[in-house]
Length: 266
Ligand SMILES: NC(=O)c1ccc[n+]([C@@H]2O[C@H](COP(=O)([O-])OP(=O)(O)OC[C@H]3O[C@@H](n4cnc5c(N)ncnc54)[C@H](O)[C@@H]3O)[C@@H](O)[C@H]2O)c1
Image 1: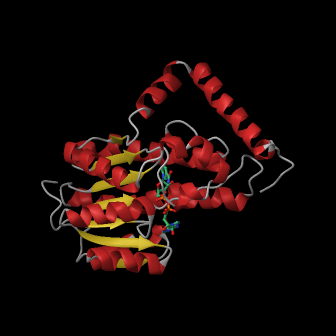
Image 2: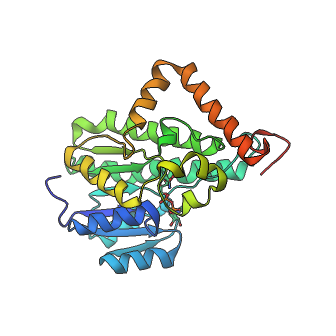
Image 3: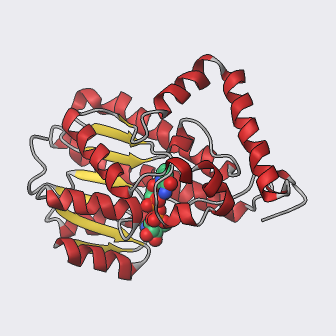
């Protein structure tokens, strides 16, 4: 894409946090932005602020109505809506199902609707997936989040591998802590693991726009993630040991091992 001016952009989960920052940033570039969110009031507020359109509802069903709102074509799709939860195997099925549904299957469903049109038009579509550093590394205290974010990363990677020669651009955005409602809701885990190096959502949006300009797949708003990812690949036991020390620190801080105790269902 030569320019974002007049581009049709969709941001799921755009009513707050990283999504709202992306919506504002794309609008500032002159794009026509559709703001989706489960929370209709939040979607409407951000859309009104940036002169965009609101398409409230579940991220899984946004492509049709968004395309209509944009006059027929989506140029950039930001698969940003996500859910975070605590727990391991003891987390109930509805928690696992919601994680798969929002963090992964919503991306698949969107791509299913977008890719054929992008290919017919000779390419030019851009799929921006807000993954997480948890998709490259892990998130202590949350198996559903870690597992589904790995899957989201794998899906973005697969799209890029498959369609990059046909003009479709894909980006995987993998921040560590970002100061949003999601981080605030993580309580002591977030305080210990994410808060010390957390950045503002606007910094994530800036990193995304830089990556779009450079057509770079991997977006690392925390540059240190690259080194950690390299250690994970090259020295898995060293990396697992350091993550386990973090897990132990978390257990000491919480004064309980509830997060890993199968007797304690959340
Ligand atoms: N905050 C962080 O530290 C952090 C770090 C890495 C990645 N992320 C990822 O960034 C993305 C955005 O998170 P955030 O931190 O801005 O969180 P947030 O809670 O501030 O915003 C998420 C928005 O998504 C909406 N939403 C949730 N489920 C939805 C659905 N099914 N359909 C449509 N909208 C839905 C929520 O209503 C909310 O407005 C998520 O995918 C998250 O996993 C966040």
